[in-house]
Length: 176
Image (cartoon, rainbow, N blue to C red; front, side):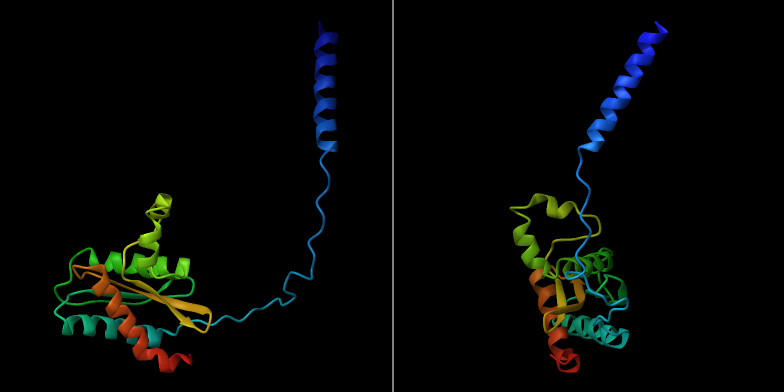
């Protein structure tokens, strides 16, 4: 009996080793396709301009009798500035932050993502994202350097218009 168990154990070990022996080794990565720089430089939005964006978005919405919150994130989705006007609803702040995070993550306005989510229902299941109109990426050339999210107006299109207005106001300072 012991001989049978030993034989079966040896056979299964040999079979396992032979399976692994058939896997070809990985080829080394080509350094031609990989950057050789150890330190990289990326364009990013400054906190000064982030504050200006948030203030402008909230102010333009207020001029149109809309109480909103505006959140500006950097290219990594980290909050740089956030502002909520008097009278903005309790969900305005969280909504504006999630819209900004979503816009920078996908490098796409959240209104566009909302339209796409009809065909891609799992899009709305990604933690921290919100595919409702009102989040707009901030670009310099082809680089996304941040995003602004506005939330609280009764219609997401109004949120988006306030965000776009704020971006257009500081665009000359961005160099694009």
